[in-house]
Amino acid sequence: MLKAGLALCAAVAICGCAASTLPAVLTPPEVAMKMDDEKCRGMGAEPGSQNYFDCRMTLDQQRTADKISYRRGLAGGIADAAASMNATVASNNANMVRFAPPPSMTGPAPQQPVRCITRPGIGDQMVTDCR
Image (cartoon, rainbow, N blue to C red):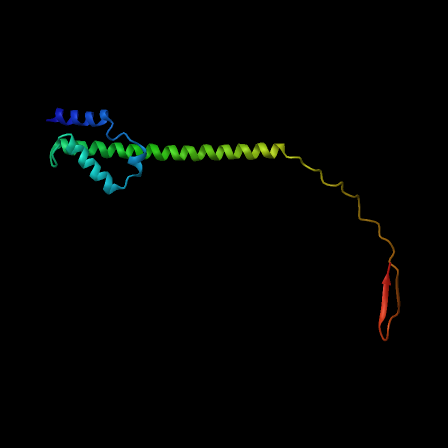
């Protein structure tokens, strides 16, 4: 009986019933459970038997491994994209034309004497001109 269970597990793994990565990863749990039940029953395993239990466990383990692999692939893809973007930004920064700031003046600007003249305007107003 143990050999039959192992043979069933090997058959499930070999036939690739659980090897699909993208659909298995995105399949809702309720749908996955129904699909697993149909697969195991289709292979002749009766619910409640050791063969059925082994089949379901194998499919569940494969789906878990596929999810981990898929997530690692996504994380690696995101890291690669970030590294590529950083390299592009660094390359663009290296190729930018930079302008030197204007030369600084030594000391403060020389002060011109201010001359203001106040004269009468229109009416009571006074006008002050500064030069």
